[in-house]
Length: 221
Image (cartoon, rainbow, N blue to C red; front, side):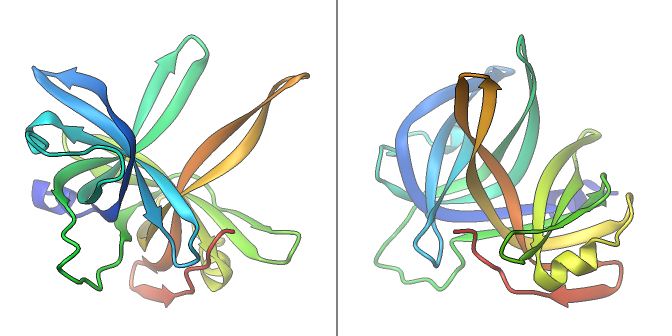
């Protein structure tokens, strides 16, 4: 697989509002990277809060203060964060380009778009909610340069859920959808419950080999 193919396996484009302050993330070979949270609106007026990682070279002299609206193009990546408490999978959009949003230029572009082309690396988990909604959980491995891969959790709904529930580990799958955040509660001890945030792709369309299935991009409320 060529570098050109790898670069188009993972394409994310987001427009939203900066929340909070820019924070230092890490440094590689003298290049500093920073992180911030981007609030992206859904059609249902619910907001997704998505982590963005950006190089200092992209944001020189750019005002990324709280409340600024920006458009970010990049890739949704996963990192393993090793600590004394264990291994944690970190998901973030790695920015390849970032611009301040110009409100004078009207655009019909989707404010939360992602495309992934990867391989199923765990057996699908099919389930139904108490309200009868069908859901299938998928974990997709997407190739990255230098023999690395990103492991991206995805959720398919309805017809897409039924269709993907019979897929096998190793199947090549293309996914179109949006990045979403979801809060959940985790019990740490008998007396302590903490609120955490999960990130995943809500699938609106998928393609496996030569088969294409369009579905409804259902909102989680």
